Amino acid sequence: MIYIMLPAYNEELALPPLVARIDSVMKESGNDYQIVVVNDGSSDATAEHAERLSEEFPLVSITHSFNRGLGETARDGFEYVAAHGSPDDIVVRMDCDDTHDPKYILDMKARIDEGYEAVVASRYAPGGGQVGVDWYRRTMSRIANLLMKACFPIEGVWEYTSGFRGYRVGLLQDALAIFGNKFIDLKGMGFTGTVEKIIKLKMMRARVTEVGFVLRYDRKPSESKVATSITTLGYFVLIAKYIYPWGDEGKLWQQRIAERAARVYGPDGMLRAAAPEALKD
Image (cartoon, rainbow, N blue to C red; front, side, top):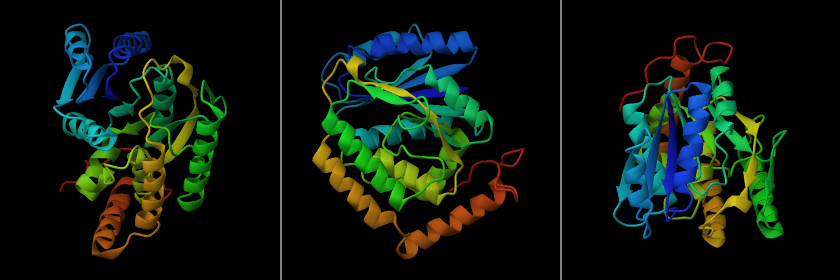
């Protein structure tokens, strides 16, 4: 099963065609799937569209009464999938604004089938790129990614800010068991949670890789919701918080991570043939 998680805030224009394109890709590839729309207090017709689409497609909708931000929205979607999915299932988190092409889901699934636990759709990997992004956003994004690469290096990964990612559900189940509600901790600091998740995966020693994708910002029908100044501040807070696992809580995380690693990985660092059950609280 592939779960496709869509955080949505005022995406009445993009949601219906995106769901139809996801359905087409999944049906053509023969993959069972479920779409999970997390409507973050939209003031337009996003909620109504999601309800209507659930009658035609395998789609469930989670609705916030008020806008809570991307961090809490992503957390709620991941918690839903962790509760309903099996460890060997896959969850793909996409933007809901039609800038992420569903065809890349198949590339991410292929890498997870090879034994990776998380796959980033990257503008900086071979075959990647971006269309319709102005020079300022290109420059700021590149600087942010180079900064995170320097502070939290992951072999083979250069894209830290892309929210288009695929994960083994078992990895998310373990992450939620290890970090609890702090898997995505900086919920009120723009899009910081996107980077925070990959930092937590590095802490967990997860096997992470990239596939190239082209960000199609020219297809975005809604206004950008990125608060650049708040998100930039959040990146520096992340560096201060996680460059080293401070305090008793950090020690507890390290202990849980070591216990997970002993169960999940073989002596060669690869996933064991039969993945163990996710950690329990």
